[in-house]
Length: 345
Image 1 (tube, rainbow, N blue to C red):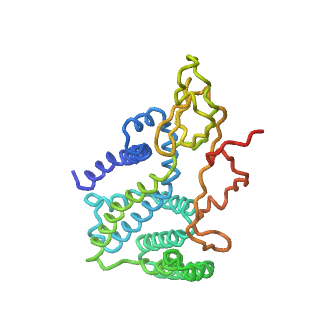
Image 2 (image 1 turned 90 degrees about the horizontal axis):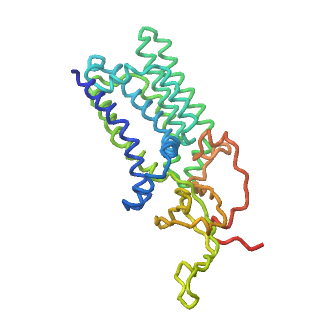
Image 3 (image 1 turned 120 degrees about the vertical axis):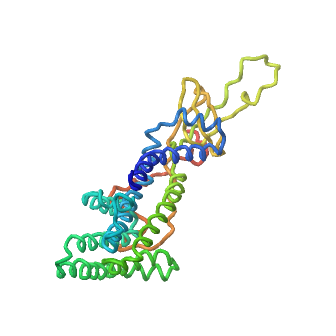
């Protein structure tokens, strides 16, 4: 059997295991490496909730994978056609089997889910794909090649710098060199890789970059997902413990002396007798339902922006979806989400 088919079979076998591994690692990290706590979470945490959190957190990765490997595969096919063998190379096999509508959908999904500071990179990848595809399909039309490979990237770069120029300058003045590079470099780089590279270097370059991306991307995805909340954060207000039915001369137990309090943590489940909460110290607390006076769902803490740069009022750390969706109305925070008891009325 050809090498590409063997690699593809192994990839299709191992690929479904990667999300499962991420989910298990997230629960292991949430339980602070305590097996009993992890088994409790596995018992009660909804698989659909975990998968939803995984999808929302890592939806940006699909366009990155499709477009990056699409560019590398088409560059290999155009630069070294004699080395482009779908039966022996997994990169060539994926390129030959990926339809154009998948690439178009990846660009559209990236435009919606990538932060503004990464959109110039998306523009660069899209222009590279378009130019490489055009050169491969229409090698005998120099005018069309000139328009798609040179004129279009130059026009896109001019428009991009016109829109992003103030933001690039603001990023430089604020010392945000990474943000300035993400905004400034891709539009100019879009003009560079619209044609073939030397044939002798194409296999090493494309396969080397593909292996590097395949090695680094899972680590980045894991680091991102391990910070995503997978359980609702709640504040549970407890009433004072009722005195136990015991001898009046007996010393009260700590449970009998428990006063009113607010327990903050991740709400695991509610049983017939207890409300199970994973508190901030990763300890599981079984709160008697008879003592639960009220519960409130605490909103996720707003992420503190790293960059102060914006493009015409659009912060560079926001996506198009963030910009389009309605904002949550500002309301006074519930004091119970701060761990404080509400003022008695």
